[in-house]
Image 1 (cartoon, rainbow, N blue to C red):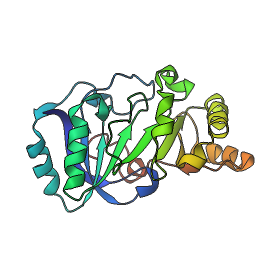
Image 2 (image 1 turned 90 degrees about the horizontal axis):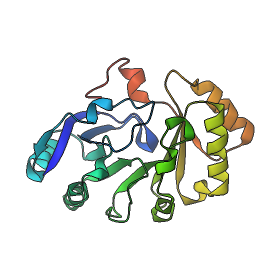
Image 3 (image 1 turned 90 degrees about the vertical axis):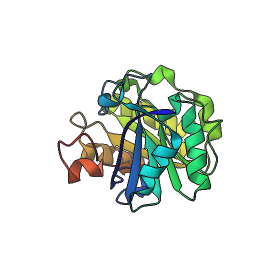
Length: 212
């Protein structure tokens, strides 16, 4: 059983699969409280559902790409079982995770998109740095940045941890706090080997927080 906040069909708005139609399974609950979180409705709202029901609803949508997200989806141990079941059924599975839960149990066929929380999030100390050694080349690391101090910290992590040699690295600006164009200029000035991303779903459907 899993506590599910919502299941919906939309356009992937982030990462290297941005623009692709995808099924999203958003699980309830997150031990973190990032100050810029835009999915606080997933902290507590949700319904207990069994794996068969979740898979059946996902299969009702015209996509075989599925994003497991939250909240923090891996905070529910049964999420690892769901991922394995979906992969066995032939799904392409992306797991969006905050980086503080160990990836050791995640099926290696899945793609992990792992946040590294910058100081501006208020949760930087919760990071499990051993997760870097668990990343595969096909995985992605995301750093969401609220300003110049976050950027300089993230730049140090990218260089000091050789992140771009491990997997794709994504930089994103906190909505309403840092202009994406400014972030892009900093990346260009420093010749950082990262991708600057925007949240495509917020451009397509501004002001809509659920079901996108």
